[in-house]
Length: 509
Image (cartoon, one colour):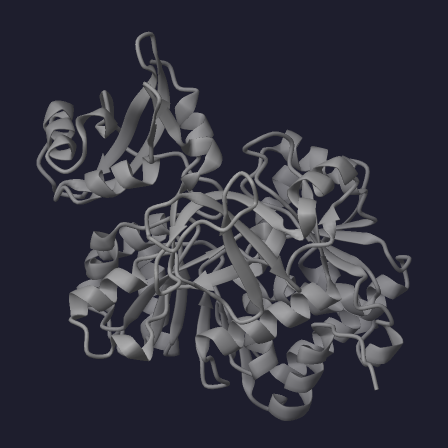
């Protein structure tokens, strides 16, 4: 027997096995899995009455139960979900709408003013009208096998950030999402007792897959509309959160939040940092503050997204805490279901010496079907049967991968490659520095040289840029040290909290 793989099976499993248990907490609203399934099926019924199978349905919404139920309700209508980045400018949002032509745009009230400028799509506002629509279709139910007959059909489209050009819509299939959820849950040893706080925006490739594997296991979702350090800490204590996913900028904000010393965070089992390579110091600070394991992870939109986790091996049990932490600070080991190779320019695996640099390339059931309406870009990134990530890395004798830099972020100074990540980690070791971002700056003699932007920790004494440059020179070769450092109040960040280096590159010198 062959049954199509689909994430819709996860909601049905949760409804049948955990229906009476609380499944979702959303700002005072609480829903059992039976209630969540009922809402998703009602949404599916409403969309079936007004959409055609294969239509795109876009959502402009923060992390709320309405967006969570869309991950199932839109699919139950045979449509594809397009979560929109709520941090984008109106012109950028309009460009995405023009590209994928959704038949519906569902809008949260907090984003109504932004949506007012968008055109070419039928709009549904979350609120009384949306709830009335669900009430009208309450009791709608459709068997999964009657909706999905092709596991390779596209059911989600996520648009990349567009930092190297116009945003591209990564098409994820039922098979992509189903295999990713199972492999992610298995890799992290998650269970139905887990409580997951949705710190990563769900428009950022499913908040790293959490809407699916949390539901699959019957674990508990805790929604977070907007990242606020004090609110995150409050919810960890109040809801008994066990797992937390962070990007480095979120982690930096948490460790300097005064409330971190006042809250009971003992429920936490594991914290994962991804989105950009964190420094070892940040991992150590988090472990001390949270009292739990902190590991690095890596993924990308085109892989649905999780690819690696820096989990220790049992052979490390006798190692010192510092040596174990060094493993957890790497990019990590490939997840279950991921074939990861670090290849040179001739597509030959680099030696496992922890020094030779190549590009991370992936084969997996998780890898996207391609980019929406962009066959040439699809062929380029999937050439030779590998997903070409553009991330440069080394691999050591134990199989641990460590990202050196994005290919586009490598700084070539006088013919030498300078890793922006390495320089950022050196700056991050300074006691006054909270965040650091390093980019290339044009130079008449060397072609380009490193330029750094840093923010300081709250309460830290002022520090001169020259002192920071000397600090880096004491730790790295002099040609790697920034030639200019700007101390700024804040760094520009995208919707997921990642630092926008393109904006920094374009700042006047």
